[in-house]
Length: 343
Image (cartoon, rainbow, N blue to C red; front, side, top):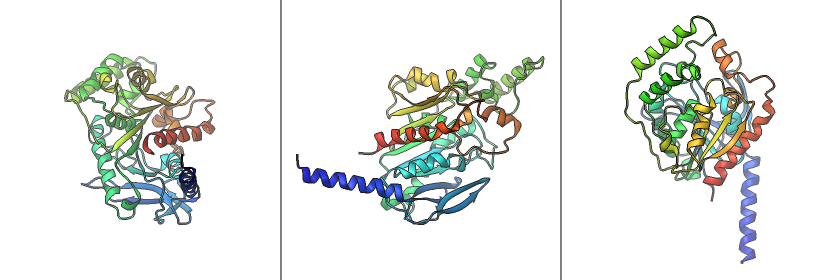
């Protein structure tokens, strides 16, 4: 063994770790391609961080800061329905502090500014939006010299988790969504209906289920399998994903490493039909984190204030849930990408 070479390599590795730890979190937005919404990018920066307000949140970041060299890898974050980049800023910061750049595309028709295409209509186009977000980063003169985009990570939460499963080899169809809801409308009502209405345990629940199924069958008849491949995406984590409309056989042996984050008290997407169903089908998949007392909104950090009542009922933390556990979840997600994306 050449110990001189080993010492130099170790010294260089430690230098990169220290540089990443000392760098500020930079923040910028890129124009989306082909009419897409903006792509928000968090990245290691040599500039000084300052308080920056985005929506109801104050972030300590270097807005338009000078990019610094990190570990050379990009992770894309696919937000949930009605989501924004800001409620994933804690995870983004953890990734950046480990040297990653992080890109968050705004999914058209399913974001905090526009809810016109929530559900399967958005799910069909989200994967291509992720691929174009990678392209947008690749074309930016600030980031192109610093990143190698042959091995990209993808994290998605909720509807973003659905996007993530597509990149892990999964195929789904709107008709399979309808079939799931027909079989499990009572047990998985929020997953099938969203925020339009909810079961209240009264006489009218039977009517609510009947009307919901009529609307679902009328709208989701398409049996075409939806698939998406992008060879640049080489590691995937799906957090509390919508998964019941996937052909589980297509997820039995993912072509890339796939990790799941499960929240045991998820009121929006009953785990047994979604995340746990994927884990049951996929013997090679990793459980990145499983919080038995976590709710669907646990992965939103910081948590959005002043939610409408319908959203709050499905997203609020269950009684007794300790948000102090979430930084460790972010570290585990980051570690998954470090293992599978770095040499």
